[in-house]
Amino acid sequence: MIRTVLITGATAGIGEAAARKFAGGGWQVIGTGRRADRLDRLASELGGSFRPIELDMRDIAAFDQLAIDVGPVDLLVNNAGLAPPMSMLQNADQAPIDTVLETNIAGLVALTRAMLPGLITRKGAVINLSSVAATYPYRGGAVYAGSKAFVRQFSLGLRCDLAGTGVRVTSIEPGMVETEFTLVRNGGDREASDALYAGTDSMTAQDIADTIYYVATLPAHLNINALELMPVSQSWAGFAVERKG
Ligand code: NDP
Ligand code: 8X3
Image 1 (spheres, rainbow, N blue to C red):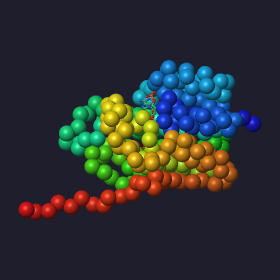
Image 2 (image 1 turned 120 degrees about the vertical axis):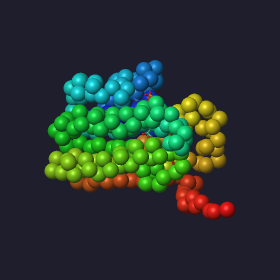
Image 3 (image 1 turned 90 degrees about the vertical axis):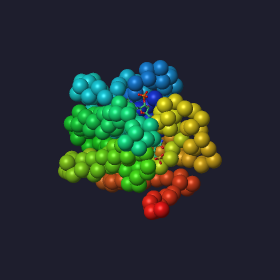
Image 4 (image 1 turned 30 degrees about the vertical axis):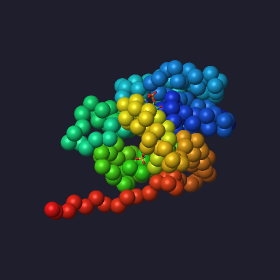
């Protein structure tokens, strides 16, 4: 039987690579995002195995109808997300923070809630994109890290809610992946984005798409709760300590 996956944020980066991966694996892929031109491009490439749906993750009122329109799916990949500009909270603007919280948290929860009845009938799976930032804080990233810590804990809690249904839930927690993530975070500053990834041999969107696919195609009795991964070139820098004088 052909399986169906709904991937949010399929217009770029990890979501786009995942759409290609699942389509290549014979799945029916529903891909969402705000940029219709990107969705159309992917639809032309992937043909009948890809159904594009223009969707803003902040448009929560649309989600119940969306769930009716697409019907039950076997897998929901909650991938759409972003970070506000790197900034200490005391210096930050509120509007980008609201966008991030509405997208990474409120939208993700609302879409999951709307899709769960169908996922339960299919004994399907939910794969959520969290981040290493959920566990390891860094300066200027409190809001993003907090949103991803929510995603991680939400994933674990959801497993409790879904006990007995056969639905699997996984939190995928990558470190640096070279995508448009940093370009978006820096308001479109290509040089700043390239500078972050220069010489790092970062993970690729394909690496994470392959990981998502691996998790999704494990035997139905096996649940990976959380999966953290980094490029070898990324590790930790320790605590910051203030000194007197
Ligand atoms: P990209 O910026 O390349 O892609 C982000 C995707 O999210 C786009 O398809 C974008 O679509 C979509 N998106 C963002 N905001 C909204 C919104 N309001 N409504 C609908 N779609 C939205 O980033 P990545 O591929 O790297 O990021 C994917 C996920 O992985 C994110 O949740 C991110 O936090 C997470 N992650 C990324 C890491 C990295 O280092 N890159 C590391 C760890 C986790 P559009 O703009 O067309 O709406
Ligand atoms: C983003 C991961 O390592 O760039 O989710 O902060 S990192």
